[in-house]
Length: 159
Image (cartoon, rainbow, N blue to C red):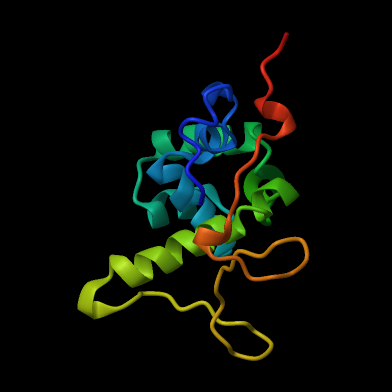
């Protein structure tokens, strides 16, 4: 990436997309709840148990994820029971899959030590390992040193 320290002094940090994304998913429990949603978890008790957080924290985080549009609450009812709700990924939530995959890959490489990863992601159709890759719109693989950052329309200061 090019050095933009001097060039970007006019870009307001308050409009940073990374900061905005972290406002939505920037806590450990939120990312782990999303991991669970991608692994097929749907019910409240299962989320709380699998993430290892208390019910009040799980309720608060799930409510935030619903409010942010990453999950939706869908009613279900088992025979003889009251109506309950499960959580399903929305399109917005589903688009976090590459982020969760990249975090998992990074953790697999740098944080698992000799024991190795606890989960392997494989393509169901062919069995090959799934990886995240940076690609441009022309479908070229892009390495970190090949990225140029330029001001976008949101970088301009309001007049």
